[in-house]
Image 1: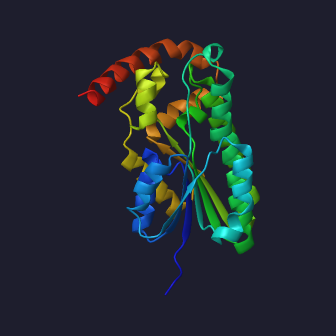
Image 2 (image 1 turned 90 degrees about the vertical axis):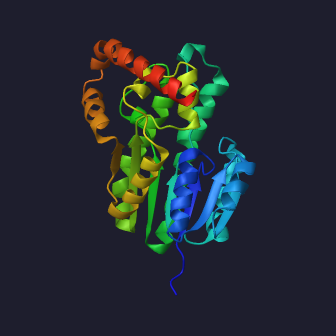
Image 3 (image 1 turned 90 degrees about the horizontal axis):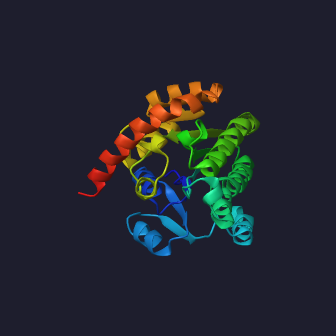
Length: 269
């Protein structure tokens, strides 16, 4: 009987993380579920046949480093890493507190980079593995009112793109998932607290659609997956000419605010 593959999921207790965990559980993976929310992790573990939970504060550098140091010895070969944890604080950068800026940098970028490196070190020992990260369409087009969030996602996209060719000869594949707005607790927070209207230009995607894309990435192993693809076309065009956003933003914001109103009406039913 073949040994079950092991998957590590960060942000496992969140909407996307928990849905991916359930999908991987159905595929027979042994799961390592990381999140800061212990109670939600325990609930998720009860839904999985073979899962280990790790309550971890990714913004605590010492705590993160200590856990990474024990990764291979404690868990063996990591076949798949889904680096998914993320946080956003909306508002113009001049209105944000230093701690709100730093938390986004720590969770979305610094911890992601160190976890990806740790998993890549583990996978290189076995000559095989796959790393998938939830990035964001906000890593392709800048989001006014979420500048730090965009910076972390731009950085993560650059990192993922750069390491792909570093890791490929070692048998490790790298993929990024780039959704537009997804109907999660994070998006609901943004909708209710003046988050970027660009998140609401189109109907928010479902968590199930994102999870299905993660499963597709496991199979086809391309570098980038966009949800929906149509949003990526305009976003990538603007990213080539970033000065365009200044002229396009008023129109995009108007469309997005209508979408936000529709979304708020839907979630407040």
